[in-house]
Image (cartoon, rainbow, N blue to C red; front, side, top):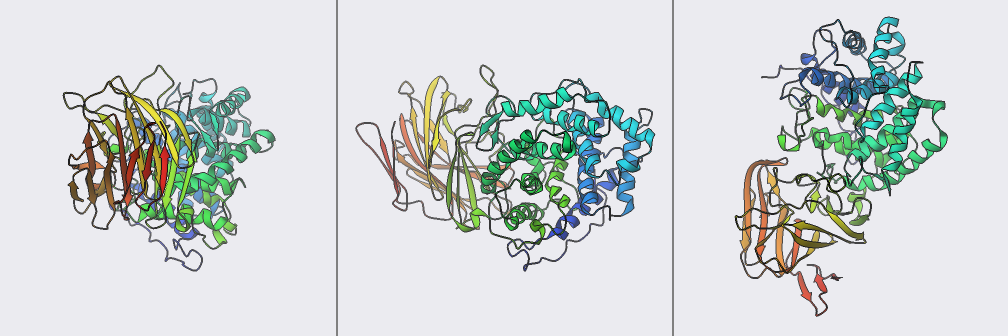
Length: 614
């Protein structure tokens, strides 16, 4: 299907006096919101109750996907309407009012699917409720009584329904709190239970797991922290002050860390599910400002949020038709889940939450301030998710080393490896090859050549610049310790001595759209290099022998570019030490020495030494 042409509004000129880092101002955000809303118009059904976008349907089907298009874009429209105090073209308000009337009329051909137990309309109901609350003076208050009654009836099916035990509990909280705000039937017990469940999942340091298990990703920011802030706005005096204060304190702590997940070019670390929501990663930054729950100066908040939005717009997002496609930059199925439908990417609307802050708020008027990666190299151990975050100003890259998050339910449940959770490392400059490639993975190789999965990750500790974990591979115990410094990571792997087969380790998958990365290898090392100089390399420091490294090339499997290349090593030893690097700096000069007690002293290329004990 060829998308119809839409005349898209141009973005304003950069303002480098106010925003010396990105050049972006509130006007850029408003213009891009208008561009996204205009791009949807050709796909609206005649009554504006659904948006049927091109692309394969989700597992919920086209009917639900059409509701998703309305609800998620309604959230964006509500932020735009409320942020301008209704000073938008009246047609924007009118078409969402028309959509509400048609969608909630069971006799209308465009009516919405009902809310049922654990159904996708639950997700979309929360967006409808939020949008109605934030745009209340311009929409809800002006709907006729019949439409308001039907809206309440449709949303009211949430009361008493069964909800997935995850961030979905907050969809129920939001929807029923809106019902309470308009005097409709709701369950205070269900609202309280959803908020209490959130407390069950809190792991400290600003981190929630998304349901039981070790499920840490961007849902922590764009759902588990975001919805409590928005709930308190709906609840007003009905909200318990202690609960609100607790949520704000946790958000404040989280934002001190979340700012470290964004590279100097605005890219978020490419990790976790629902990555097609893209710049929704900026939503918690605005939420912190909105709730007065952020440690960040206002100029830094805008620099980080604008940098993320600008990062994607400079890389073809939205596309030439004004649409958010199912992918990362270009359409790319490797970042999708079964629930991803053509309108799913419009959860990115959450990034525009900052428009609710008035034009004279300091986040819009203060001069931009640099982000953390702009000014200093850093290393931070995050004990709750089991991650090391290390970044370097020389290349602006943020790297995440993973020794704690696999997104598996608690034992004995099992599941297949996901390339967005099972890897040893992720970054703002790379994506994993999908389906599972050799990148950032240590695999035992079966006799038939099949590499072992990582499976369940068992954390062993995360402190300073070191993190460790173990996993079981083909019945063998494999322990890995990572030590980071600058752009480098040294990994010490211990495989139980009953294993006598081959072992393979991959470095970062480097991708490019213009040409395949240059591949080079030699005895005990391999590297891939892009035309801009960015290099991924692996060097065997101990146990790998003198066997030649190789570079595994692939095409069409990486979100960052058409061509990808991963340097890999193969060996057989029970103790293996590897230098893994992503950047533009040197990687020669590293070494490892094993003492009689089994400890490993490692030396980084710049001479810094660390000891890794068994």
